[in-house]
Length: 79
Image (cartoon, rainbow, N blue to C red; front, side, top):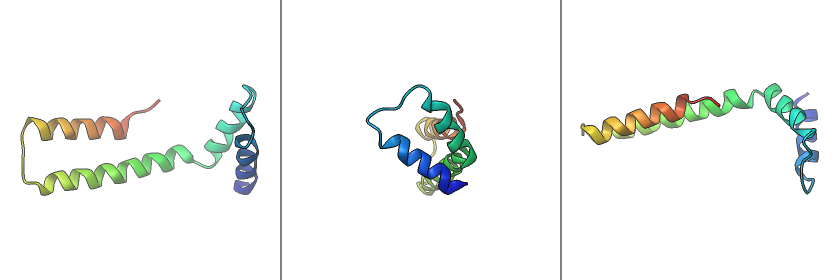
């Protein structure tokens, strides 16, 4: 199944342009591959690492608070 989806994506993305009718196919393949979950997991890992580095500075204040708020907003956003 995954190989079939990958083949479909490869076929679609090697075209000079996509047709509007191709978009649902692409979205379905990406959903079946759980690409959104994978990307969200990667974002959380990077967020955690960034916040650990921020903690290692042993600094606090409005700038660090803003960075934390931004990191939370970016990792948790949904489209």
